[in-house]
Length: 460
Image (cartoon, rainbow, N blue to C red):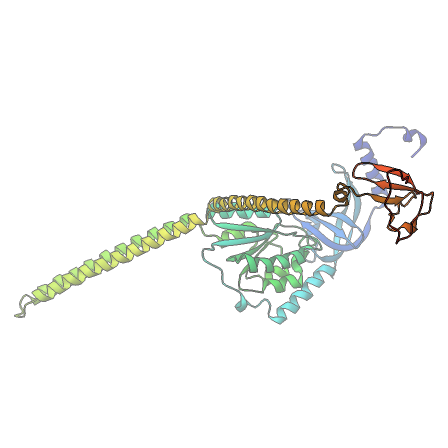
């Protein structure tokens, strides 16, 4: 770029167009090798994907017309060589490769690792269908291992609450991608089984690239899924995404929303089914009684010509009929009570009921904490007053108030004088009294056995 252009102010579109011309002029056709990732195919029929290696990545576009010449369909994880032109997509300012042909080199490193682990675990029998644990027809408690910020969580909750309002659903937050995600999910599975004991566990995550979903291809996670008695449902990614967790789980759902539909029955449909079966049972009872009555009438007609009286038999038939009606009535009443119990259990399982109860427990704990704190402060105050009294009793200051004094040398250390031999005549000493102190000078030092009774005129 010359000096005049250095001072020129470009528009974004002008500069981008210039860069595009430079790239397209410098790289007319290039071959680029790498691994396919983030493959997508919109309704237009074109394919968009990322070609990457260990250090970098490149956006690639394969138009619908060139797809006809592919030897096979593209998949994430494939290692390929793309022949095409380098260009710039000006609306986003991104450079990309417009591919003309794609040569297949086999599965990429991630895909080979996935296939090897899948084959090894399958050979161990970890994916055997006969080892799958059965799921409850109407689960009472579902626990989700997912990210609280993910859209997959809200898709599951929206579908589940629409189908069965009041169902208890717990959320155990874990990272769903990255190096720590697999270990966090393994620890979460162990803790949930030991503490929450739900009816079913759900691994819940939305779609993403192979790298985004790679945490669900962890061997330890697959083995943790098979532990315990609680069944595990894998609801990871989109319908086309498969992970090791999908094969290890007791049920694989194509999406989180589909998992909610598979696990949670419709409450209204269940109620309609109960109503339909009750009506059908009533019709069968009426038909059975009507058929028995017709048989009775036919038998009575045939016995009219017989000499043997049938009144006793007819009475017995009436008694049996009455007993049958009562039995069916009691059965219907028992079923009604059972339905009422189920409705009551549903109400007790409501989150609002649990919040009220836990709020009461929190208030009780707060009162107990206040009482315990008040009692503890009173104990510490009593011990403090007792210690203060002991301290006052043994304090040297208390001794000074009774007329005693403390003699100290007039040096930097203020050495306490215990014996007369510690000072010399003429040396300055200091006397500490209960209030204030005295500066004195030693006139004489007497031996220890000398009885010294100072006179009124004695000078110290």
